[in-house]
Length: 191
Image 1 (cartoon, helix red, strand yellow):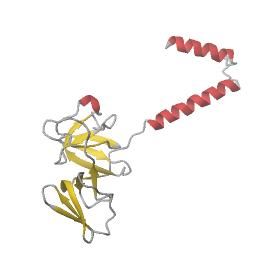
Image 2 (image 1 turned 135 degrees about the horizontal axis):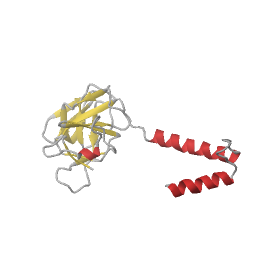
Image 3 (image 1 turned 90 degrees about the vertical axis):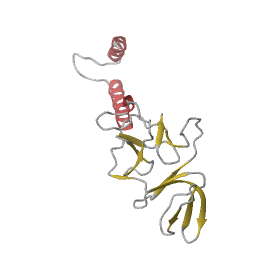
Image 4 (image 1 turned 60 degrees about the vertical axis):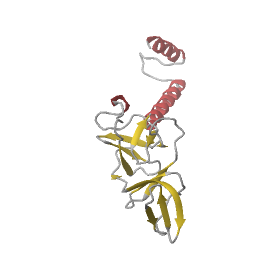
């Protein structure tokens, strides 16, 4: 670190900067401008989303086995129960063999996750959210494109993230991990 400072100081003096007189050459001013720009990008690049103002908890969770159009869409889950989505309700695309989490009273009214390619117990579905917060017994995920809305999902028995993965005071993860979920919509693994 000291060597870098000495080299930088020698280089600045060679290009007209004098610490005794406190003036800068045009070359030095351009270097300062570049460093400030890089610092600003670094500060802005390090911004994170805050805890969402609205947090929902799914009222229906299930693996989609069929989608039937009969006014609206009837979503049929693996366990046999059905959910009717009205036609006037804006909806994200649905597909079979995805985990659907439905809460219905916010926009969007649900989200669905793809099957996981991970070979880990309980890692049936996966998702990497834009931001994530740890809470006692739950994980709150902020989905990409919906910074105002968080989804609170229960942790499966035995899952607890390492305390070094999130801020102690806010619960915000330092880097949102890929999360695994089981077919019941519980978080089973993060990393």
